[in-house]
Image (tube, helix red, strand yellow):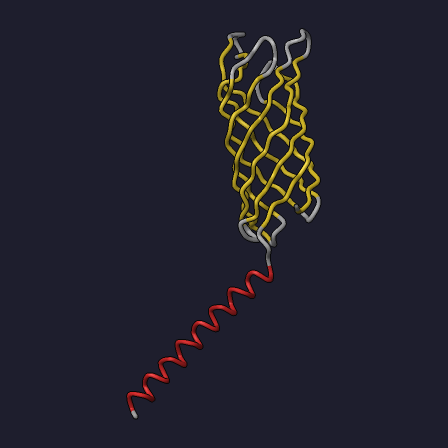
Length: 180
């Protein structure tokens, strides 16, 4: 009889453990659905090196929400660095993958992206490594962010009028997004 009581007690405790674990997982999934978001953005930037004056572009970003706090991103579009004077602007297509982490009430986030920038102008046709950390604020529909972008292989002019590579810029992005 003691053995039966021990086994029955163990079985009841085991069932209670599994039922509370299952309940906790169901509650977590009911509060948040993983899924995709799509966003369309406009951005403007201020290049930090000569000969570039400003940058304007547009992008499309797909985001996969891993949880309420963490997301994976993939961004592409078209941007153009404008140069005053001659017709030697630098147009390019950025392709970036990234990680977004919300740090304050699911609104304020940090973003790190890395990828490539494919130059598509006639005079310059190289591809550059693109690194882009940023900070932003997002609601259900609007996303505003500030980021630094570094292009390791895009040409710049040094102070002694010699050419080298390594262009940086500060950029702002305003986007509209929605859940798919």
